[in-house]
Length: 107
Image (cartoon, rainbow, N blue to C red; front, side, top):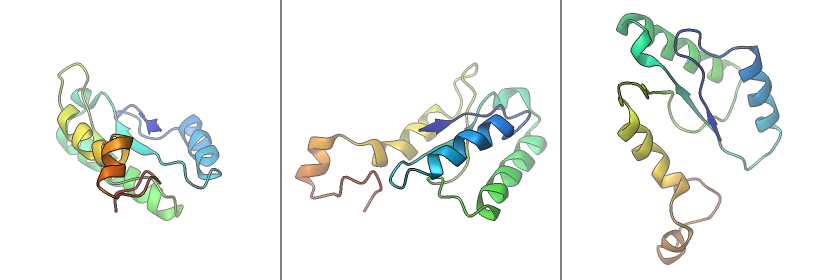
């Protein structure tokens, strides 16, 4: 599951409600990706990444990987998201041939 909060605002109440529901499902993985990063000054974007990451850690949540940033408008961050998600979403057949577990986490 991808959680895509607006980078200008970070995680809002509705996002936290969704995350809380996801956390109730033990094997369900999710990734937080700050969207619209092109609309935020770099220094403010860096702050938002740290605030978001720290909030996830403080709540003891199990979000997958690191907080990512993307700009669909400028097509920035797409390859990073692809590279980050490919190992967990990978092809079921390929994962089977390679002897990887199917719990959606890289081994």
